[in-house]
Length: 113
Image (tube, rainbow, N blue to C red):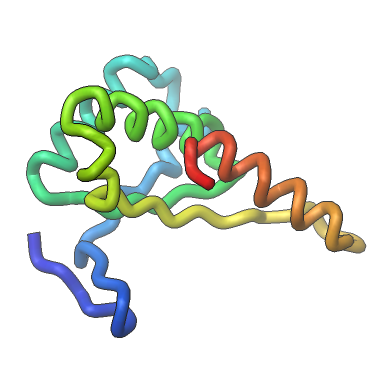
């Protein structure tokens, strides 16, 4: 898969795997099948993922995918997986605590520090 040098220390796949489809608006998703398909995409070279906290279980799926990836390939290859998430707060006042909590939830769901 072709890559794009986004910044001096960051190259990404030119095509990101979107996960909006698991948000629930597109029908029921079988988690086991979703994870299996994530491996198929990764093996085909599509290693960059677009997530969001409001995409249903998207962050949970990437967390499970990462855990299974370690089992199959070892932790030394985890850097092959790129997961870019975003937080979409409800309109209104946003406090530092709200931001910190949202970041913590996403990190936990994705299985990253």
